[in-house]
Length: 468
Image (tube, rainbow, N blue to C red; front, side, top):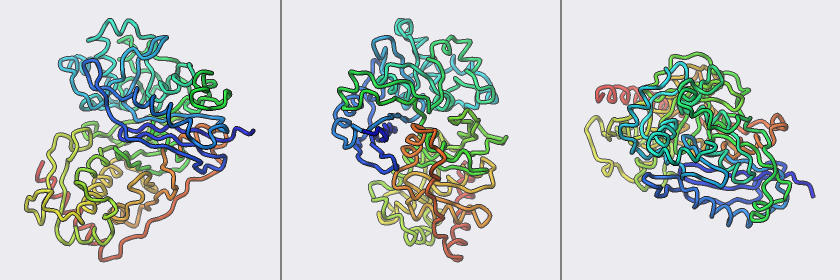
């Protein structure tokens, strides 16, 4: 039997899924579940035990798993696992936990400058180096037991294969642990003794080895199924566009992340959640973010996202509805600001917005903030949208109008989201040039609506500037 299928485990902050893709990239089977935090020993932890139980139940039920020859894991960033020879020393800390107390000041006092790490100081545990510093400082007995720190994707690869590794896209994801310009651990990570606890760095596409015999038996996979090193989720998506000159990729999910493939020097503003990510090939990637998926959900307030039509967008504009930042506490260019809803400048409650218009207002808000994030990176080539907002007509219409005629907007038409597709491509990196991403140009707004959207964006900018 030909083992030409690929198993992708995609663990996002809000949802997790596992998919089997055939040799043509068609999904042969999949399973999805909501992801959630779990109580840890004195902190909020990632739900590793729940995910392990789910995988042990879901994978043996997937069709065509007997043909899986490669397995790869992608996960969200800002997550690291401490292991010894037996397993987890501690459950991994949830990056939304914020109980670091005085340890945060000590951590930040010893950090390297932004031009060395590309990492701004972020809230909660989004600088994952803080998580490791806290364990070292507050839990020395646990620290003494740790053999390896593993980025979250590589923890799962280790759980499946028994081989410990690290990888640059997770190490360089606003952690303070990595220097993108020098392609090595940061000076702080080396001074603190944290760098020496990491497993060897290997490429995201490297085959670590076969699944362990016990895991192959429990999951119903071939004994020779190979486990690939794994990748940070947004960088899995980006990997497919690294050869697209001048493009800016806008990935949409829990986070909306703009990444410039050219990696040229730009004047990033770290206080506005602008940073340098690291692509799977090691290149520095100027990045600007906000928690778009979380904010979209807040603004919908239970209304169906399917209501975000172009007609509803036009009604939002003509009725004078605006949403001013911010509606999430984590990151973004206006973190710490309290979001507000207005109508022709008058402050309103979100409940005052008709339910049929809330998704279009949410799409408008995400479009105008996305335009800010894309513009911050200075590229002039196409903007490519991946993820749920690529299929949101109100969002793509608004963003296209804001970009104007000089900068094309493209969207993924792939039925499979970019993270999973990119991870599958990495699992068989030797074949990466055989298929180009499926893209199209969304319909543009008519001249009248386009002008209205531009004027509404000018009004949005003026109002949010006045609220600073």
